[in-house]
Amino acid sequence: MGGGGGDPKAKAQRKSDAPALATAPVTKPINPAPTTTPVE
Image 1 (cartoon, rainbow, N blue to C red):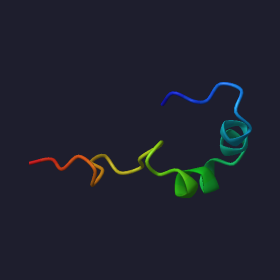
Image 2: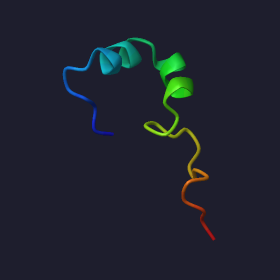
Image 3: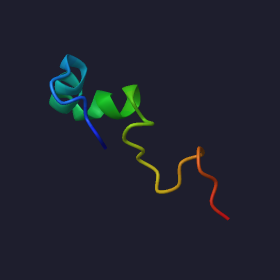
Image 4: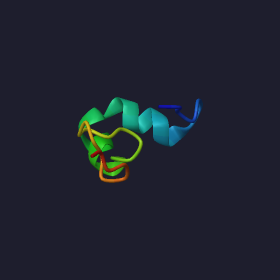
């Protein structure tokens, strides 16, 4: 969440959702529990 607003990268990512997920998995985590925040 929290796009760049008028960022060319954000626009490109919004245009292509599929590659965007792989390009920026941290910005848009697909899994419910990312490895960054381990859940117990």
